[in-house]
Each structure stands twice: as C-alpha cells, then as structure tokens.
Image 1 (cartoon, rainbow, N blue to C red):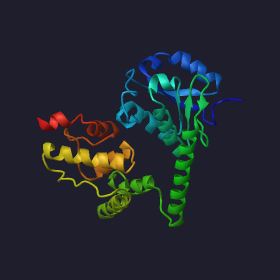
Image 2: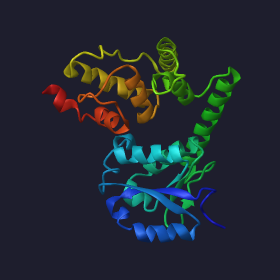
Image 3: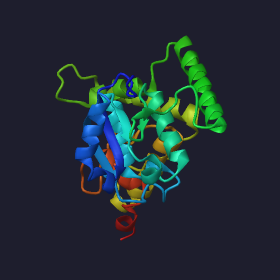
Image 4: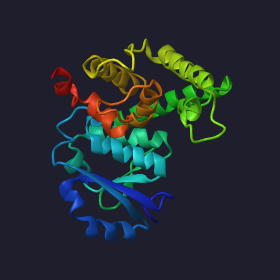
Length: 260
C-alpha cells in the first residue's frame, strides 16, 4: 500500500542541502509512485528562525504553486529543515484546506487529516475542521461564492485584452463589494493614498494595506497583489505587483528605499 495519496506530482520543500539530493529524492519518490514536479529550497535554518512561515518567501511560493497545480508538498526532512513542530502542523492544515496534504519523511507519509501527531494536535485539527465546516455551510446557505472566486470575478474586467471585459464601473463595484466583505469579516482596511502620489508617501500605506490583506484577511500574497494592482498602484519602479514584490513589501525590503 503506497503512502502517497492519489496525487502523482509532488513539490519538494526543504533547505538547500535537501535540494542538492534531488537525484536521490527522485528515486525515493518513484518508489512510492510519485514524481517530483518542482523543488523549492531556502537557506539552512531560515525556517526555524522565524515564528511565522509566511515570512519565508520560498515557503509561500511553494504553497502557492501547490495550490495552483493541485500537487502535494513533500518535506523529506521535516524537523531538520523546518525546525519547529508548529511549522509542520500549520503547513499541513493550510494544504488540507485546499484538499491537499503534506507528505513527510523518507516514506512520504501523509500528515494526519482527522487525527494528529499528538493529543493537542488532534484537538486543534478537529477544531479547525469544525470551524471550516461551519463557515462553509453558512456561506453556502446564503449563496456566497468563495472569496477567491469573488476576487477573480471582480478583477475579470481589468483585462483589456478581452473583448467582452467587464465595464470599468462594474469592476470597481465588484472590487468595492469584495473589500466591504473583507472589512466586515476582518475589520477596517488601511486607507491608500492616490496612486499618483510619490513613492515615499505610498510605501508605508501600501505595506499596511498588504499586511492587512494577508495577515488579517488570510489572502494569499498573489491575491493581495491582484487587489493592489486593481487599485491602480504600482511598485516603486512602476511595475505591476506580484507575489514576490508583495512579500518584499510586507517583510520590509522597501523600507530603506522609502526612508531614502
């Protein structure tokens, strides 16, 4: 009986030392009926040095790729590379929200879905699952689409290459509805200055706005980038926002430039 659940393509996550074992890992994955689609690595010790894995760009990227491609994530050396038990648990819980799983160790063992690695983990997983089930039932009862679907619908009209693109005023109305929903669930959103304002004025406000979208509202950095772009704001270089630049904004990499 294979340890890999019905998912052939997997994404490897670990430190650079793990990445250097790509050939060995590929053989090990093949033994369990899986094929490595992507490998994402970070500096040794980096994950364990952070309380919040969202601060590790590579982890966020691997998670977004897993969700987009519907591939499980395999961490061959979970404690050595991630450093903290809570990191393993949180990765697993997030993936399971998207119908995926975290595979661990040399046996590609799937992280427990309804159970847990210990009594506290079992209780937390059951609690999170119960809250998710209740939330989804409530949304379904009133006919709400998922927030991700709402964002995609709201932003559909911003693509001018499509001849049937939604009129601009309807796009802004949909965006307003999405943001109103987020405020209702997560509290008031930070105000943004005019998109034409100087970068030193815009940067602190954009950082607060992006942090609110990701940390308070639970959006992915990719979805946050879409909403910021839809507001008309661009990076300091005049480029559209992407996951990587939103991550840099939240983690303070633009702070020095703003101060200068």
